[in-house]
Image 1: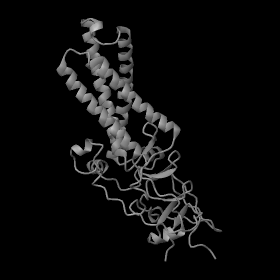
Image 2: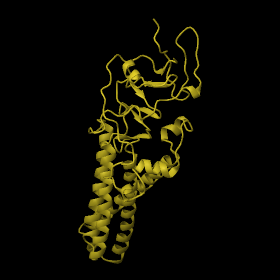
Image 3: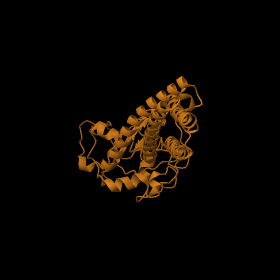
Image 4: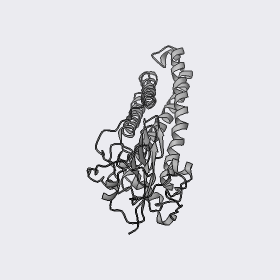
Length: 327
């Protein structure tokens, strides 16, 4: 007895279909309706998310250490020795606030589920429970054996399919996807701001020290002070350029409703795009407000994930592309 579904090859670019019988069948593009992300939801929305990747963990630790180094130089080399108390209080408060928000955004981006699709749900029983319409097509990821929603891609580091995956960032040890893109954008923005702030303070400190005695500019020796400031200047300039480019790229991706992977693979224009402002509201959690700049605000405008439903048990299907048979 033949199976009610046919076996196809999963082609990421063209999503072409090749029959497994004696002849070759081809399903028209308009008939191959991908399954919506609202049907397939993450099975562990409230669970702690952390990727056990040695390279990513090392990069995340280095990120925090670099912020702490900048904090040390700004506070102990430039602000505390300053004779102007108002200057020290204002700049110290501003820098520490931005640094705290940057680290909080980094932590949220790292420990938030980016939109992972449940693993191992590619079973005949589960597909039947979705109650899809005849003629619809669902795609199975052959690596994590999950049914992939539209615009989901597999990450080889996270070993999961991620909804609206933009890229995997080792600096946050996580994918940037549908659920944590806001936190990644905030992280790049706050790092760029503290880098710019540190550079401005370094310039003013050098000018003051040239006019005054170097021994009165810092509690450290003049050579040590110069080395610390030069290293901070190099770090600030490097990260200002890098994070500014990343921030602009992410905002552009949100406004155009295209992820980095979709542009790389030429998958643009295959879905109904939303306007720029609506896409910004979806990414940042609602109408424009100060909560857009807060890494602690939840994404209230998004649909709350469905309650976890036990997936019907069964054997993983062999097909990578499954067409719901016509009645």
